[in-house]
Length: 220
Image (cartoon, rainbow, N blue to C red):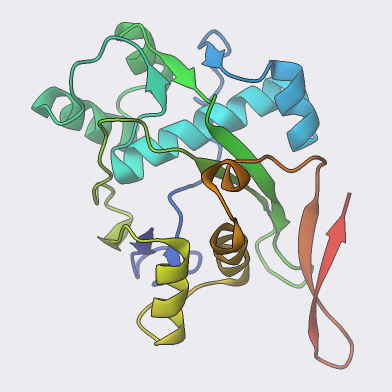
């Protein structure tokens, strides 16, 4: 997990999973994705196939930008070499298209060990409205996450229970979607269970009642 920089417009200073928004250049539909078919991802995400593809491409790009982890399959030798770090910085700075980088190295995105966990939407009263898709991924063999992004000031690699314990001690701050996902992962009895995708599209919407009480509404 990374601690978002204090300069970020949304939730500055909180600890969060690597991620971000879909960019206009996340539209390279020619990049192959290993794993479930396009129509399966579209059903899980409740999106058209083209948008589902863009969301997966954006997720892989953001993970690469913020942690140096590349969810791809191909003939790259080592992500620890200087060339890969140079390219990661270029992708983060929008000077290199992520799809072009994958194509140059003959890589395909590898989502065979990636699970969709659900969609969270900002509350109705929030000045910024958007939906966030959460995924769980198995760390590719031979790769090690690092603090890579300029959008974060700190990174920590720990178990879900470890992150929750740090939050209870006041060492880190978690927003509700992050906390719930960590709690679900901590409750998983096996790696396979942690990597299970939700069987239906669920959208969680934090809602404030007239009494001032906050509740969690979900839609399917």
